[in-house]
Length: 274
Image 1 (spheres, rainbow, N blue to C red):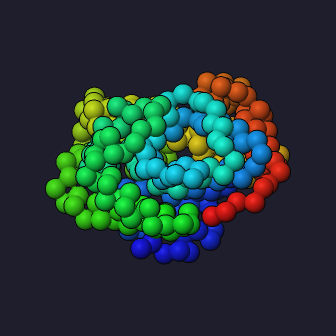
Image 2: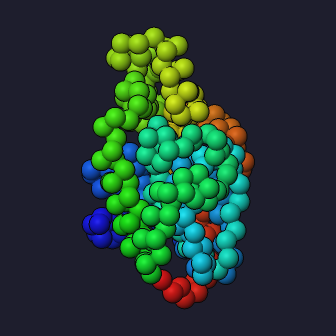
């Protein structure tokens, strides 16, 4: 079972959403563990583009195990009061090996995991049905990932994809595709085609989304985001470029996006039974 200290210090928190750094032994396949509790009278959360798949246990009274596919287009999420979610976000290049799915067959979709891999889903759902707390559910999901990684010795995720994606995560605004391909000893074309075939997303769009999420984390943590400084930090051409990118990805201006996210944290809180 995962260390319960995982839940003590969220890496990122907005309203009822909390994201936690995964255990070290799972960091190569899991981007984050996260929970969401709709503990307010009027939850409206803007889901923004995210190139990953989450294995999620969610519901109000009857919780279900589902797959939340890569988010290609921003949308609003308005759960009932009392709705809760416990999930692990899987790095997209590991979805085939770890979850047995083609990630972009599930783009912008939420589907029951049992409809995809009934045998695995049944075992995991039986374990989750015995939980009553979000941290317990997270521990079971992480342990499932740990058990699955033990079978990855023969996984066919190309090493070029694994290495290239990690380089893009580490420096999405600084590392160019030709630099990555040169370091890996392959052509730009081979790298683009291999990453696209395995993940369903181009390296350029993946890096663009990574930069967007890094910007959003910084904006969430700043009392008053200084957009010109954030534009420079995250290597946008200028503030106008930053605004255009956020509007294109999130559907609203940066100021409106931050305002919406802070409104979630200010909403009146009701008692949550967890």
